[in-house]
Structure formats: structure tokens, C-alpha cells
Image (cartoon, rainbow, N blue to C red; front, side):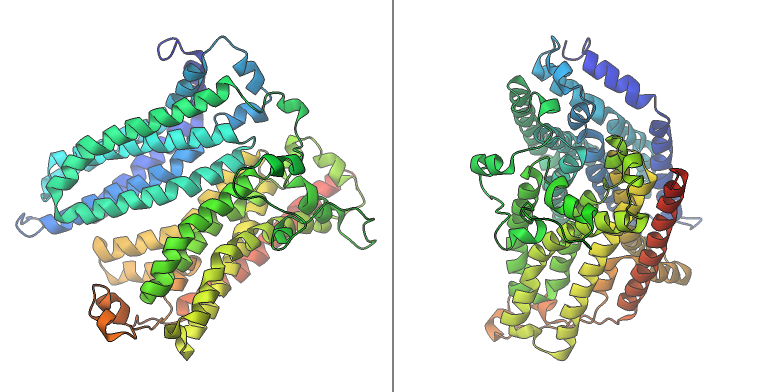
Length: 556
């Protein structure tokens, strides 16, 4: 019932592994990893293994770290919609009414969602083995890396499955899963890099402590999810599509959203009790006051609490203790917006299609411009306000910390804020554009994440490869041109200057990093500004044209 004759596991495996995208994803994944190793392969006719091990180790470490981060980002896409998908398809109650035990359901969902990802990881093993003849890496280190990778994927899948049981929409489950998983993935990468100087300790921890901890955490999360399925609080979902927010606030634990108080009313204004003005946009008014929060505020409250919990230590270290790390905090703000920004716009049009109200909306007296602007401004307003909460410490540091009080750093602070808000506009508009093209919200959200990740993070990966394995002026030129699409490159390219004011503190462990003024220029910043302006113009024009054609087809 749990493994061999588990109908949930059998059905999910048949559906997932027989889809065409499973084979396409496997081909692209292995091809990409193979091209990286091929491009970085030594070109010498004779390889001196006494000199090459350091470069070989860098190649293997880069291979595993890249694969680890890819697995961390892909796991929620496979597991975060396993239970919410049942709720969205109205089959959740039928599943609970089956003779299957909750543990069998949860275990089947987890194994089915991670089987494809495990196949991708195992398929990359022959490529990793090709790097062993270069020297510098022991086979046991490869084994430890793959054990850690599989254990992490198991934990990330359990986290995503737990989030899927808490929410009614895949988008909410996906964003909360990412907010929890990405910090854990970054901590694991940091541990792997710090353990490079002591390979034996890293090997022992990776083969003993880490797998045991992963199994314990996974079992605990699965037990919690199974207990929730055993006594589900959300049975009868078809009759409870709209949540009573006042009752939810009375029963909520932790943060409570008060829609009639500041700053909550910035992203959650109170319900309208008066007539709407004649020139008001009814789509905007309906979305901002009712639609976004019709499924409750649990996701929003968790996003705020998790983001602020992570922001506090980063703010203390990156903005006040070591101001030279200021760009790293801004990068955290950008990463937060990458995860949160698309959520509120990726379902703007697809939700109308899923509810079969799209044609009804197009037959109203509203123009396509009013419909799109109303939905876009709602998502942009919510994501911008949430991002501003995390960005507020930057302004606080600029006022309180004297090391930011020079002409160069003031402009760097202002420019960083500009980069953040341009990123807010770009992520929201991109998600809105994907929503006009797709038919399902989950597909729209995943495509939005894919486009944003490629544009924002691929230039950083290319720059890292250029500095480590790809050498040559041509690669450096390509890396510089590609960096204009990344806000992270724009932030790190600014000429930020700082030094310790306390002579005693300047002798500490951070003196080398803190006293060094980072040289840079404004070319990447202005390139990113130009890229976002052009991209927003093109995307907006394409959206209006696409909806106008649909508008004309409907008979208007």
C-alpha cells in the first residue's frame, strides 16, 4: 500500500514520466552540464597533473554547486503543487475519502514528485565521473556530494509538500516553499565552500550527519502533513472558496493584517462601503480589495514574517557591522522580489480562464487597456509594498551610519533603490505577460520564474565561468554585454566606498574587506536601466496587442 501497490504513486509516475516535457527536460539538463564540462576541458595535448588539480577542483566544485542550486530551485516546481493541484481540480475531498491512509498519500506524492528530479541527478553522474581523470578530486568526494544532493532534494521536497498542504493555490505554496528553501540551500553551499580547506571533515559530515539529519527532518515533515490530511481543516473547499478575513484574523497565530490601519492598508485596503467614483477602474478596485485576499492571508503573513526574520541578521551584518557588504543586502531584497513579485500577476488573466469568466470580462464595457492596467497595478502595488518593507533598512542605514555620508555612497544608495523598484516593475510586468499567454496559473508562474532567473542570474553564472574556466577576451566581452540584464550585476558594479571609523575594529578580521574601496563604474547600472525601460515598453505593447485581438474576436 505504501510503495508497491500505492495507486497515488503509480498514477503520478505514469502521468509525470510519460509527458513529453520529462524527456525534453532530461535532455536539456544533461546537455547543459555536458557543454559546461566540455567548454572547461583542458586543451593541452599533455596534462601535467601536478599543476592542474586546483583548476580541476574548481571545475568540479562549480559543477556540484551549480547542480545543487538548480535542484533547489527545481524541487518546489515538482512538489509544491502536489496537494494544491488536487484542491484546484476539486478532487481533494475524493482523495481523502479513498481507503488510502494519509501516510500512503503523502509518501506517494513525495516519491512521485521527486522521482523525475532524482533521475536528472543520477543522469549527471557520468558527466561528473569524466572530471575525475583531471585529478584533484577523490571518488569519495563525488559520492559525498551526490549523497548531500539527494538528501537535500528529499528535505526540499518534504518542505514543498508541507507548504502544499497548507494552501489552496499552487502559487502561494510555491512562493513560500522558495522562501524557506533558498536560505537553506545557500547555507549548504556556504558550508561546502568553507569545508574545502578540510576535506576529511566535509566528507565525514556529508556521509554521516547530513543524511541522518535529512531523514529525520523529512520524516517529521511527512508526519505533520499526514496528520493534517487525517483531520483536514479545509474539507468542503467547494463551499468555502471565499475566506472570512475577520474570522481568520481572530484565529491567526503571529502576525495579523489589519486592513484599516497603516501600513497594512497600503497593500490590503479595507472593503468598500461607499459607491465607486465614476472615473474609477472597477477591475483595479475589485482586485485590490477582494480578489487577491479571497483565499485568505496566510501566504501573505508567512511571506512577511519569513522575509523579516531573514532580513534582521543580514541587515545587522551587511549594513552596519561590515558596510562593504552593502550590495549583498540589496541582493537579498532583489531575490525577495524575484520570488514574490510574479505571484500576484502570474494569475491575473489565467485565473479568469480557469474560472471560465474570461469571455464575460471581455464583453463588458471595459477596454483591454483598463483591464490590463487594473490587474497589473494591483500586483505591482502589493509586490512593491512588500519589497519596500525589506528595503527600508537601507534607508535607515543611510541615515544612521556615517560611512555612507559621502557623495559617492549617497548616489550608490539612491541608485540601488532605483534598481530595486525597476526590478519590481519588470518582474510584475513579465508575470503579467506570461499570464496573457498561458492557460493555467501554475504554468504561467513557472515560465515567469524561468524567464526572470535566466535574465537575472545567467549573466552572473557566465561571469563566474569566465573567471574560473572560460578564459579569453571574447568570453569577457560576452559576459559584460549580458550583465546589463541582471540587477545583481548593476548593484555590485557601483563604486561603493567605505572604511572602518574605529581604528581598533579596523584591525579585526573584516578589515581587508571593509577598508577596500571597490572600484567600479556606472555602465552596468545605466545598461540595466535602459534594458528595463525597453523591455517594459515591448512587453506592455505586446500584451495590449494580444488582448486587443482577443477583444476583437469576442465580437466587440
